[in-house]
Amino acid sequence: MPIINLSELRAALSPDQRLIGLDPGKKIIGVALTDVTLMLASPYRGLARGKLAANAAEIGAIARREGAGGLVVGLPLGLDGSFGPAAQAAKDWTRALSEATGLPAALWDERLSSSAVNRMLIQEADLTRAKRAKAVDAAAAAYMLQAALDASAQSWPGS
Image (cartoon, rainbow, N blue to C red; front, top):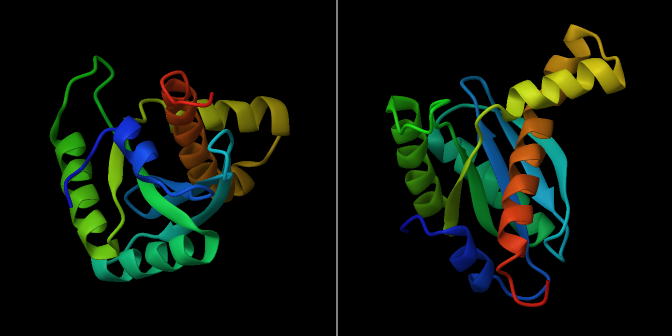
């Protein structure tokens, strides 16, 4: 499946379908989920990053269980907005994941999402480093997914 833009992804969803947000890290893939109105993103869980087939099976199972019809995957652009090797790897992984799951996918800029979430968890939640490590991946996915929802809501009919 080709990677499509977020507006096309939203338009392709059936009523009451959700989106899954993914923040693919080296060890953990942060997973977030929208509500059915596509207004709110919430942390879901972290998945151990492994072989594509195993991760695709887990993400596909989440999609079926939660009624998700598409994926929004974090794109790690450079701080200056440049498209480097990490962004190309994320794009390639997203395309392969979309093919393996049969779910359409869009990419969204995830610059500084983990940093912002870590800062919030330190300042607001007062979590220890160990507890933050467990929470940050899914929270970063939710942060990225919420930014995508907010940006695309302005062009979405019914908003």
